[in-house]
Image (tube, rainbow over all chains, first blue to last red; front, side, top):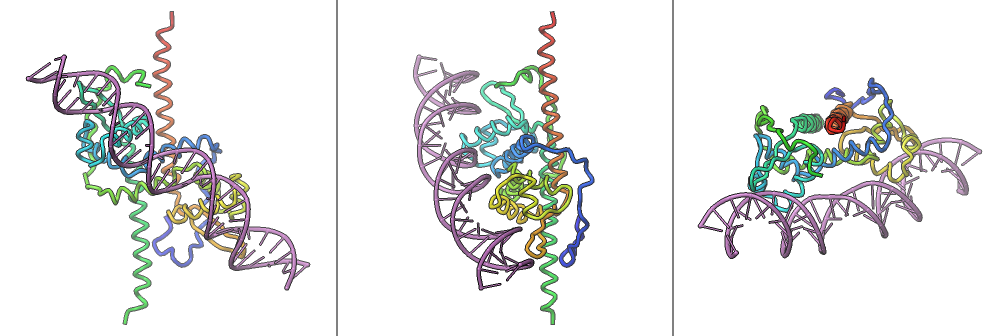
Length: 134
Length: 134
DNA sequence: TTGCTTTATTACTGATTAGTAGTATAACAA
DNA sequence: TTGTTATACTACTAATCAGTAATAAAGCAA
């Protein structure tokens, strides 16, 4: 991806996708957008992270995240509807767990991308700093 | 709602993540959430798709997507700030292109996941249908 | 110059949603 | 039974945001 020192030239190749160009209708894109929207709230990501080491009941999730009870309940419903977490009732407690580690793949990809951006940013900065040497 | 099946077993394995457990602060998660939020609007995904085959200027994007001019301009600004598209001015025209095909990786992952969910759903359905076979 | 085209910005409206207080429900204990 | 705990739901508020009309600015042509 776009060579560290991309600063100057950026005369990047067309970057046409080599992927098959299935035309995605706005309706299909809406489904994808809706999924991304579920992951676009830090509170929900907090809950996902809280479940990373294994299943937890709602009270444990509340304690781990520090979020309010009604709030956690609402977010869990949204996460469950999106198929990101699954629900198991045991007596009076309800346990939730990550349905598929796929969600961590997504988050790691985004983290890597953000990290790369920050690195490239700081490189540009240090290049700027070079002018000040002496 | 309440889950057609899953009722029975679903005694899935603990599904603890085998990944290193770096503790992510809410601030870090907010950065990830913000990135997902950029992709959580179908209009912006439409623009991303419009750029899949190569760079386009704003007018071309407007024609391809059918979105309003001010709207496209605003979305492009958001996409550029997130580092998803890059901007090149040429005379009076401004060309945008996908900065990294990484965004397509993300979308494909989500599409695969959604497809899998639909398949599993229809499998459950067909199992239900089996009861009706005389 | 005037006029046209392209893009960006501003101000506004309507819709969505996160968080919360209060309430409801269900399981369990005494 | 009563009381307690765990979870879900409802109604509300405040904030965010997509879309749009109007305007601005900049490049270019005549």
